[in-house]
Image (cartoon, rainbow, N blue to C red; front, side, top):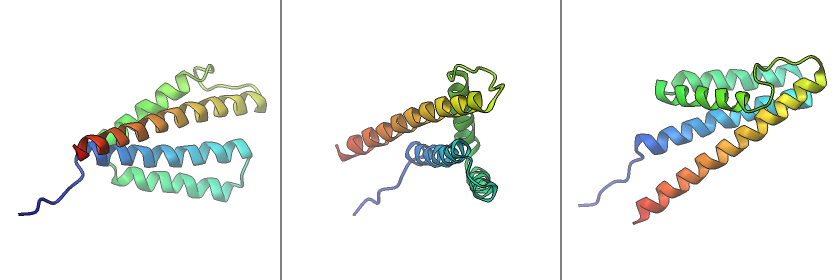
Length: 117
């Protein structure tokens, strides 16, 4: 009898969180570059679509990651006085989210290595 491998919630959840973070990073990079509004709107719609099919636990973790990333960005409330402050805030949040995404990828790798045993 051959056992079929099936992703558990942890693996699936990590991938869903990573998908949300990647879309969020796309939005932030678009804001930094001052991309056109249509492109930005499309990314926001993609984010909303992914969130609609994500579990409440995934959305909660995603929201917590965003909260921590914005708190760590040295502009606690996200308020900025000019365009330069806004860009600095966005760069800091982008850097934090990229770090968190890398940690999630590491967790995925650890799960795959553990599965191989």
